[in-house]
Length: 316
Length: 316
Image 1 (cartoon, each protein chain N blue to C red):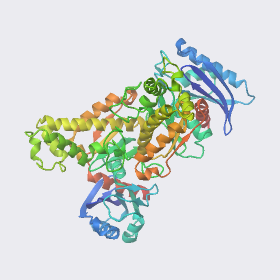
Image 2: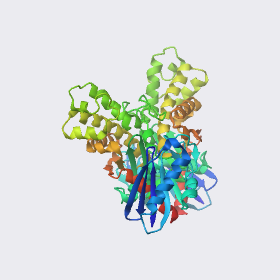
Image 3: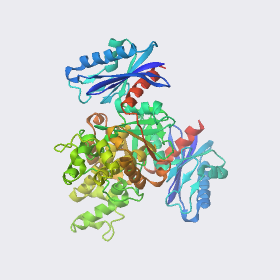
Image 4: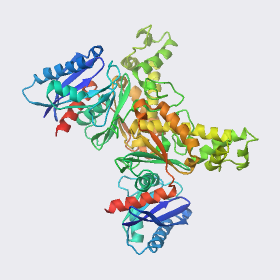
């Protein structure tokens, strides 16, 4: 079975031709041009679907699309996706079906990344896991008994908005002291900047001397590998915060396999080892049995693979 | 269908004869005598089952038992229940079946209270809800699609051990800043005591002038009803903490009906209104739609009803 998986981002639309049980055959990316409005964006998605369809002789049977923002339980409406000016409650699959004449299905992008990880990534072989996507924001997805858990209203796994300190900073959402306010890329970069400015001799200065907002966690990782104690400490403090959030997910769900992906996760074990140590310390002892944090190297591909999986499984 | 539901506590064993679709026909309570060891306790449970069986002419078809501590997913072993000296990993249903010659089933007591609430309490009519039991400790249960969610290892919904402040106090478990460390009865009483000692003229002084550890939340409630500003403030601050924990449950599960029970919950809306206000403030806006906190007046009965429901549904 062949389906097309779309990852609709505020900057780029990414699409992949996906074969069930095999993976990505072809992929393409085009700018979203979100400022030109909903219909223009959906026309561009349709163009991408047509281009991908022409790359195979096999029949494309369905299209899945991952979108930022909240998707209802039926999967037919997305509400106010961030960075899409003018979008309200939009029936994306219906609007897309008019354009591509194929069955279309929709899910939240972070949720679908978890599904992609379950079907094609390190989640293969796990019946249950929690996926945390550490990117610009912090999102997540929950796989229960090999299925995506979306909750009674379709909005489950807003894992970035788990409060670990009610005195803590506000994030984009109005949650206070949520893990996104520590580990979202911009927040992490700002935290790093505050520390880097206190160390004028530190080699980290060379990454954007006037503005650390764009500091890439990969830079922190590379400096950490070189033994830069400040970089190691920034990642350690951030990893500890992640550890507290993980304690919360596990104490609610009793799902002990945690899979981490996304740009910030590229800091690797400099981030994840402190998360492991902190979670192990504060988990109730029985929950430590079987607890593990894995890294998912699929990044953008995960959401496309998950979107295609949603489409294929909805058609089955 | 008739089953017996047992609530095995560290102090008392409570049992009820329960009729499916109707409720409790008869109930009894005897001291646990936990200090005399496992076999003695199970003999006493068996005695209670026999006494209850004799109170009906109908056939008792099964026994359900709610126990404190972690129960495995299969429901056949409880691990190290607190306040039961000498208990390790104990196959309670098998040991009980030898004594009562009826099919026996086991679950965690707080989990089963949620099931009892779903079948016989305010949870009737809700497909999904989260139940929080505010007693000596803080426990919980999750009902998903009308079924108890126990998680892949059987230990889900340790809702008292959700961190809301990683700088916060330690509780009985080794979790730091978990909601139990604020709202568990002993912790709440201690917090109240620290404030009451600063107000020597306050009428709350009369509740145990030398030791507030046993201060009953009902006393705080009664003083609050009389307009005692200190009592109102203690309950408000505690309710706000509960609100943060509720934000976390909802952001993970997208289950928006919260049901609260247990001794501390008897403080009623003096506790629950601040919880509602705080949760509403820090929930992401879409999650506020349909959000509600209900009070379950069934207290000890909930766990017995849930234990009997487990038994009846396992036999079906």
